[in-house]
Image (tube, rainbow, N blue to C red; front, side, top):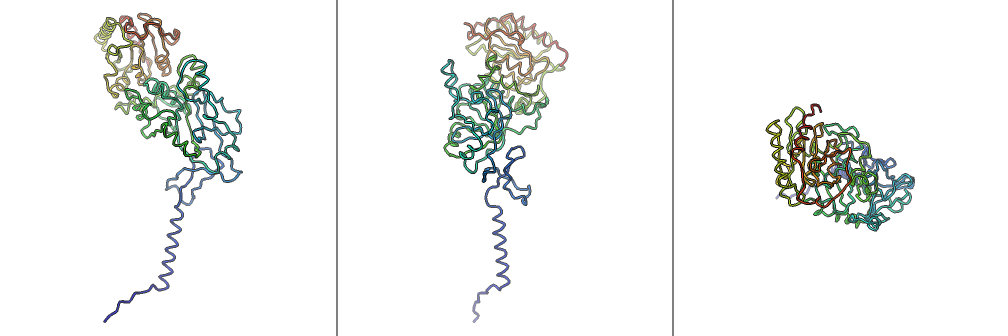
Length: 477
């Protein structure tokens, strides 16, 4: 009978198995842990990459932690890249326990704190309300590198890429105009100041916005009733992530410090300290004190209208049939033309269409889908209507020599909203009191007389038709 015999490894096989096991342990050991590295745009000059250069560039390098193990390696200082009241671009901005830290050994070079941040409470009028908005050490501290080393400990977590930190209450955010033509407007004007050569195509080497932090707004209170806010944001930056008040609180509760690569920090209350705001009531006005391209907005406009299915070059130019769009509020119930004046205006516009071949659109924006609104505005040469949210669509018009915005007011009334927006985009603006017009060169004072919000606003349709004809007679771009 044959017996089974267990074969034992010979000595040579044992040696080979040992070598193989050692090799496996060595290979796996080189891939343990998380690599720490930095991009070429960061200013972590004293902190070499932890990644082993032998690994080459084939594997992704994760940037999650920045250590400073010895006193000879100072904490990276915060750099204020650009600043005007309410709009600041920081490199190496720190956050710990919900407080923002500016780390510098030259505090005299840092702008005054109240022009950078605030308590982010609801905006109200009066001296007490202004005082209540002034920031304290709870909102922002300016500390030295030595203080930072003691406070933050031996290492800090990295939030890489471009972050927009919105330090506003939801009060104005949940409104299409105040979001798209004021807050988002000011954000992009600030960030685009880093590329003052943006061409008409909107192409720019600026890195895309990676994330937006709403430090004082929850996820239900940044969208407007028409859902235009999220359309604008998502169509411009498709890869964007958003964090809200609860996320900000969660990060604070972690008790760990974070360093943000580059931050566009916006604060409405801080902007209200600037001269631009004081003269226009627009917080975005401050950002226009920074360098910038005449075509700064083309990046945003082109992204949004392409997302809506149009070519970025679409518009009614000199060689195309002009497009006149009258945004009617006659079914809105507030701030409406006298009915007979509305009907006369429509008749006069249709007469222009019949005589000169212009395209004329009489629309109520709330009856159009978001795509329809953007497509129509992108093709429009002259946009007109009573002061109201529908005129926000002017931001999708293409600025040309003919591009015109005509806004109807109750006589004696005026607000800067759409005048400032049109002027900032390089378009001609006319305010109208019945048969009297004024331009950006000679504006009346801001006023809200009785009748401003009413439904008996007069307008001379014949005068408006004549103005349209004059604007559309321009023969060169």
